[in-house]
Length: 118
Ligand SMILES: [Zn+2]
Image (cartoon, rainbow, N blue to C red; front, side, top):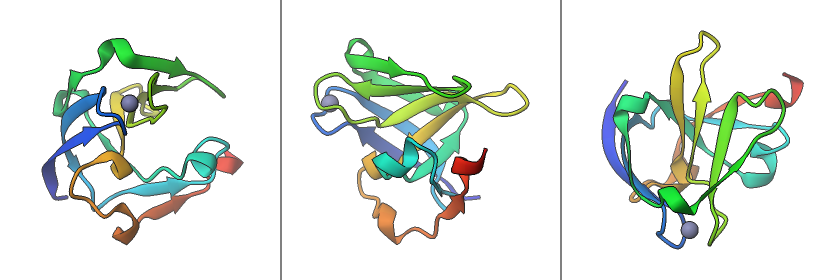
């Protein structure tokens, strides 16, 4: 674990946040959404996440078992984070590492999750 502090934002900048997250344990996933969006995700607790702007800019999308609240910017369409629940019910935040400043998400050694088969 190496939790670090990052600034994150959507493309247009309307939605922005600060987060403490471990980007050494990221995942990619082949579910119907992640596959299309090309997400590189890292997870953190809600206490480590602070939305700085854009509350009113967020559109919500739910699918499958609706365990994850996908939130994307209504101006630029970028989903920079999502709220979810762990299997034990704990609230979590899925961070789209592609939206963190100063991070080369393609260079990370992400673990691939077979979300398609869930
Ligand atoms: Zn935006």
